[in-house]
Image (cartoon, rainbow, N blue to C red; front, side, top):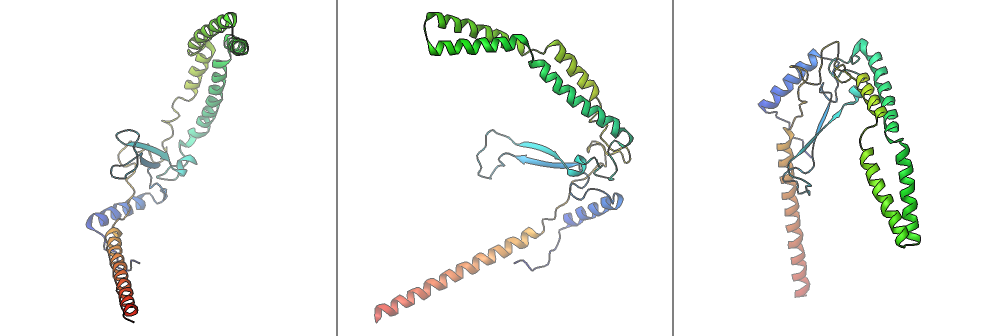
Length: 238
């Protein structure tokens, strides 16, 4: 157990001072992300971790904080987008439904439905009674389905128009999220946020306590071995 007092380094003291100054200016800042709006996660396999890596290099993800998910500014705590929030939210929800309609319009094609049905029926007939006629029918259906599938990868006229309308509805959705009160802009502007400080001065004390514990365990093991040897010598001599 580490009972020694923590002596912070000079860099740690400066970092804590900057954090206190930031919280003094923005007392309602989020205590989880410290005004950053989210968290960065690294992976998949850092060098030296011993974990298997799927590819060279590193991966970096950004997950939004609960304050942003709830529509609050991480820095000042006010409503994100301010007066624009309600119409922006309405446009975002409407754009979501338009996008779902575009997906249905993309796949609702008569030639795709008919081609799929003919292909599966031809395949079933070929498996049940394989002969030159069923093979020719299956080959023609397979070729037709390949042509239909390659053409269906392109957006239909209706789906293309719906996706354009969705983009028009969602235009400015991400840009309007920054706070209208304090000007927070996803850490793109100077002074938006600072890296959250985590004191690591306890590491030295922890390593010292760990080394002391290992030393005590080693001494205890040596004492047990010596006692066992003495007992064996006494029993052997008797």
